[in-house]
Length: 288
Image 1 (cartoon, rainbow, N blue to C red):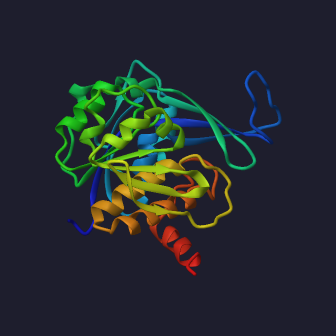
Image 2: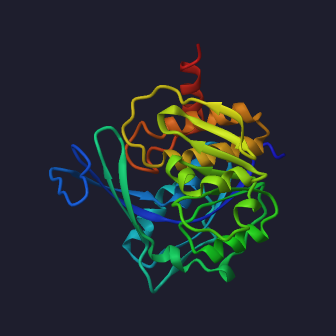
């Protein structure tokens, strides 16, 4: 394995519009007094930048609209050194937008308007050689299936947001990542896979299993949580990177949990994504 693993991410790019409120509303309720912020986001973009900041050589295959939101959505990726040569502009649609409400404990509610992400079609996919590929479910399913079919390397499939899948798709991934809600949606499917399944458990950490049997478990370091947006994407990127680096599975899971925890310490999906030295510093401070 290369000293610096190469990762291609096929996925979504959004501009996140974030309202931070004293509490999250219940169904049918209006909560006022929030503060408004704009952050680059989208699960594909988040995972790409996270993998880059954690030490990978990263390229992103995606689509944005020909509008004012596109440059803002790509700004941190470009500044961070993610290869955007396969991230193209669609003239007829808007850049994807995420509408996010964040409460005082960092928990969030998210609604996504996909926009140009829906225009990423199978015939547009040209994957660069890489050690690993990370995908999510915020792009068309036939495009995702095509990417998985044509990639020759380790595949991480983050099954988010939860939805019906082609029967053979999950079995083609070396690593599936789900949170507790997604794990409940897919249920027995996850126990039937030959590949690894990582289930994140929020503040309780994460478990790694194969064929329904747990093979590793880890808890995150203790941190002051500001905003959980992007923590799951950071976990997916960190675990993929650690595995292709050749880390032992227990060590890789601990690193991914620490990276996810570090991502909760600042507001916004991409501004909060940690650099490798920050993750290692948190791990070191929590030892013993």
